[in-house]
Amino acid sequence: MTTETQATAAASGAGATARFRENKHVGGGTSQARVSALAGRLIKAVNDIVTDELVSYDEYNALKAWLISVGETGEWPLFLDVWVEHSVEEVANANRHGSKGTIEGPYYLPGAPVQHSPATLPMRDEEPGTPLLFQGHVKSVAGEPLAGAQIELWHADDLGFYSQFAPGLPEWNLRGTVIADDQGNFQINTIQPAPYQIPTDGACGALIAAAGWHAWRPAHIHLKVSAAGHRLITTQLYFEGDEHVADDIASAVKPDLVLAPTGRADGQGREVTYDFILDRTTEALDRIGRSR
Ligand code: MBD
Ligand code: FE
Image (tube, rainbow, N blue to C red):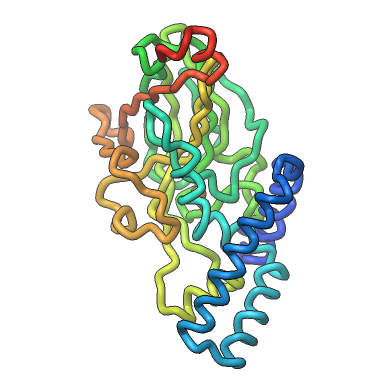
């Protein structure tokens, strides 16, 4: 029988690569001048490192072999989302007034089963891990409740594995789409995820080992929160006391995103409240004359 503990870098990498191709519609939109400017700067940055660091042919060939293996193990999505996406997110969300966003990472899947709040994420009968009641309120930057806001969540299980990217897990395990009530309130029952370790048997793991880095992301819940007329936010929430909150390999932790759950009165696991504040879409801002 396959179990999630037999997950391999090549299998999750192939899955992440296939999902990226299915879900992200890339292309168009980038002018020749922009391609030339960005590709030119990237190439120059690499050449500058070679001349500054006196890079040898042995080192150049090690890089070439490693880049080839990133593709072979399907780890381009992992590599880019761990080491590059955080600065792209910072640029994209610099002008927000509402809640903080952070990176999406490689394991989002659209179309998780829809439920109305109060909801329990799809999970196995004896899903391991501490039960967590995650609740809160979705509102606009002006403080109005956003009735019927949509909260998509996905997270790893108690062993750090994501459904559809590790074998042996039910299709939508710990993935859901929850609709808030008419006051913008939501209540979601799930389990607390475990920290995530970059697979050690792929190209990214080889780089981490060769450099003597650690391979961990703190435990996290991924979210996409949206409401009509408002800008969707992609974010993650973390847990106070997790040692990797301070040194996430993906550089995606922000102080506002760290939760401090408390024990539930009934002894049934933990609970935490977090409110989301959504910016208006630029179309909505244009309609009201940018008074926000
Ligand atoms: C993850 O779960 C993740 O969120 C990121 C950003 C990279 C690798 C695995
Ligand atoms: Fe993740």
